Image (cartoon, rainbow, N blue to C red; front, side, top):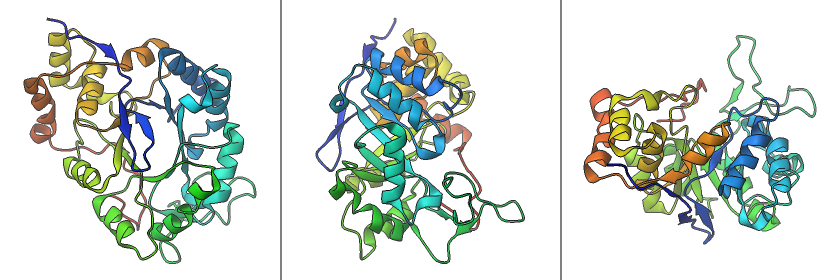
Amino acid sequence: MSATLSKNTSLLKLNTGATIRAIGLGTWRSAAATDAYDSVIAALRAGYRHIDTAAIYGNEAEVGRAIRESGVPRGEIFVTTKLWCTQHKEPELALDQSLKRLGLDYVDLYLMHWPVRMRGENMPEGDKIGFPTLPNGKRDIDITDWNFVKTWELMQKLPETGKTRAIGVSNFSINNLKDLLASPGNKIVPAANQVEMHPLLPQQELVDFCHGKGIVIEAYSPLGSADAPILKEPVIIEIAKKNGVSAAQVVISWNVQRGYIVLPKSVNKERIEANLLTFTLTSEDFEAVNNISKVQGTKRIIDPDWEPFKPFV
């Protein structure tokens, strides 16, 4: 029997009181030619009202142009962008630069992309978005003179400027969140924590911790990032076949059913439209997806080298 699919327009509430769509369009790796522009236009026409980008994605200009030219009123679209690691000491300047690239007056959510600073001082002037390296080829990480708590103290001033409605973090572990929340200068609980989340990395403990603190979880790479390896899982394929839906719809629906935001990425118009259609998994199917990581073990796909900083401990 086929499951009943419906366009998902459900909302979650941030700790600021603002609402945000449970399904948003991710735009990571949509930097080629007009991929980002075309995918955002397709998403907004399909009914999406939540678009996620970042300075390091290299596509803010295309994303912003699509938002402006979509015909959808700006106030109906929830827009997120992110502070890159080389600009931790100057988040307001970084946000100004993002807004200029986007061609927008404000974003709805501004996230610290990673809890680690890279030294951008030696990068070419005017080009501070990148990966500065040491002579040995390793990333030029600063853990002696700076930390993410200092970055957060500066970011806390941004909502007052009107340039962002809310601030949050990304790729933060429970321990990093505890350090941030316990810091003497902390006055604002992050509105969101955007992390890798999928059936091979369910991170239930992190989900529970964030929910308990009023921090909304956002799941990036829900299909497993490049080549969508999660969609090849036999359990996912079997549930999709049984319900007459796609494997992606199983995974996206499972994420939504866990009570947080999910950010599937595609540059294909048909898949973008299909990813907005969800259904309710039966308790049996829901538990079967939950059990994938218990059987196979957890697998983190996005795990860059930030040595000597360890973001996930």
